[in-house]
Image (cartoon, rainbow, N blue to C red):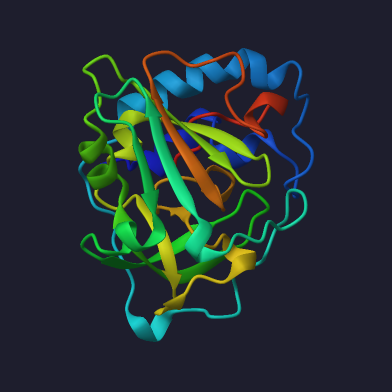
Length: 231
């Protein structure tokens, strides 16, 4: 049976196929990204299985030095006691959560491979709260189809709701069993084995649930990178 990854490779629309070796330059970003994005989204959404778990790794396979730090702008420094996560949009219960309130929720830990569009990967243990638990507390309206993530450094991205509520999509505050380092996105970052690295926003301060995508879909996505970016 053909796997999702094999299917994308056969059809020539894999996430890595639209970029050069580095994270910086999409191939023909003004044309290729615009023309292929709708097709990519439909195919990847169709293939994606919202509840299927991605195989995880053992503690002995963790690569503590393999996770490369990519910066967008200046690294924001957010004192943990001043941090607030806003969850708003099309919800019945908007939230403003302290880090301690998030950490009081059930801890989920997973050892997964983080894959960057540059071509490198790292096996990392992330610990945090399942995003779907936070979304459930906010009581999203039935119309919600997308989730926007805004970061303290101005970075932004958007996901489909099915990927956001996948069991292995975390809002992480731990890395390899220790408090999440600032350079890796502390106090809170996205971590999931189902998306490429540029979709896993760091320093997340706001999560907005919406029924339609805005004109601006994401920092890299708006420059031609694939929107769905599934693995």
